[in-house]
Amino acid sequence: MKYVKVLIPASLIMVFVFVMNTAFIFHPFVKSIPDLFNDIENSIVNEDWDKASEKTDALYKELKEKFLWMQFAIERKEMNSLIVNLYKLKGCIKIEDVSGSIDSLYEMRANWSHLGS
Image 1 (tube, one colour):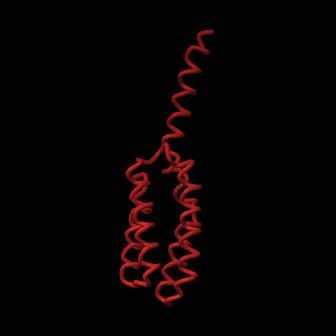
Image 2 (cartoon, one colour):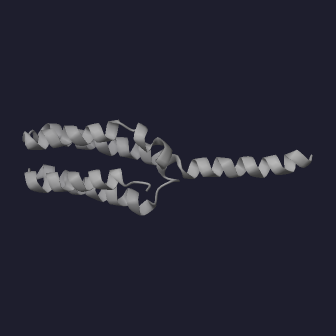
Image 3 (tube, one colour):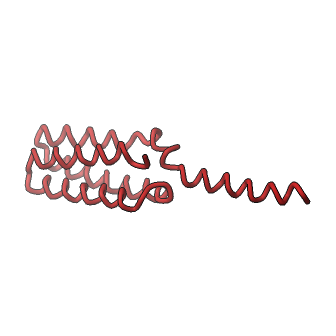
């Protein structure tokens, strides 16, 4: 009985620490989002706006999936800034603005690389 009184709180603390650090733990294993950044950049540089728009939509879906399990470890403000940058990127792609698109994309990359730190 004495061990149970110690084991239950200790195991709960371990679970909470794991959940709160999921972004730090799993961030290096998420390879699809940086690959999408590269694909979007190549499409923008080549001025293939239809492909850039498709890849941006795929990036939005991918971010939404990742945010489901990273939401407990990162601040809401960080997630919102990525989404705002994504909408800026979509707007720049829609009007076919190369410099604005690249600017928004690199801002997203910076936000992604500092996510959860």
